[in-house]
Image (tube, rainbow, N blue to C red):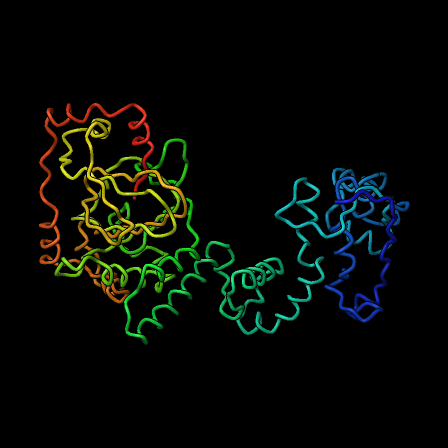
Length: 442
């Protein structure tokens, strides 16, 4: 924003130009209002000084004009009853002139609007910005071919901006991808598709690097529901579930991200079988994946799982090992378990088997840390065949009685913690205990 005392001359365009759809200089008019009108008005601020001519209108417009014709600033005009479109009309037809005051060099971006006036003017940003406007006009053919012309101009501009910024081809866009989160996930899914095709051609396994490449493109939702893992002072965690879930009404279904971005889901599913420890003779059975990023969950027990989990941490980080209370038989509450030394598992080395139904947490870490936790939803066998078929199509190793029994035998029964063992470990220093309390979950 710059303070300017330079007056702006009104556009004062003719009705003939409206009918022709073209200005005298040969450039296009965007409906009745011309490109230059949008650009000029969108550079105004609440404190832009203006002046109206004596009331020349008739009918209801005359009554409204009488309310704001004495206004000295844009903000005052809007407060006194001027419609936003009145600013465009009155300026273009010469009824409103600008005397000076604060005027921007560029039209106001909606994301940077700080005042009520900014918010009103910024809704024309995409019409006012010459480069974006030209790009939109260049893309008109693609929008028509994709039947996206029903989208308003703002959403078309947003689609174009996201496609350029995130590398999505505009002809691959859809109206359902207007949020940055969905657009970023589309990019991740395209990346996963390329990796899967490349791995198949080269007959190679899916690597950690492949997963990290996709995870860095994936956009995480702010998950406010995982209260059992949420660190103290946090209101959400970056966590998504892919695969099977049981709804509150008892139905079993595949999560929306699994269906919308099946290549990402398939990539992770192939990876866990390609990278699981060779000592296990059977593919690991699971129905679902918890995909996590950059949060430290407190000590917790997973609820509603059937059988053990297999988890791994990926990315560029230090710390972040898994604390597992392998003998947790639920006879002690979580606070009491903090007095017992857990087994520490280095999940950065690859997929690691553990029982998520028993207490676990993760050490504090520094850096970029993703985690993938593969597990089976409770009573997964109730999932409809259609859902099971979809999961299997995405390379999920859907559990069988034999595979589940095999892996449950790999995690010994919990023995519980005796009072003697608790006393032996109760000498943990207060500083270390505080660090443990702040530990994060897989």
